[in-house]
Length: 124
Image (cartoon, rainbow, N blue to C red; front, side):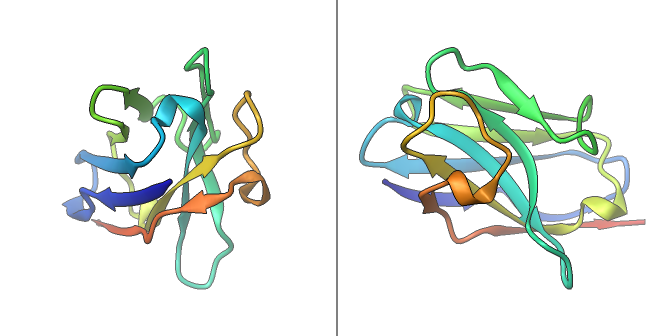
């Protein structure tokens, strides 16, 4: 599967963005789909993931209540809706697909396919 992210940009603190991850090949419901982010000088960080069959979502504590992950099987796309953005949310956001597990994982080692990333910058 090939993954392509879009929707990043510059936004003021408190604002919102919607990131999209379009998949080509197999449908996204065949994978655990995750979002990760990496800020300059920091390690890659788990943000959110959605399970393969149930579609249940898992979030990092830092984004819980502000971000929502969802998928549209008809469009073969996974979304990350980000509200109440903070400057510390600034990072390159990447989507990823896990071909093995059924339940969402927060470890980037468990993901097999990655997109190229999209920059999100939140100004104070």
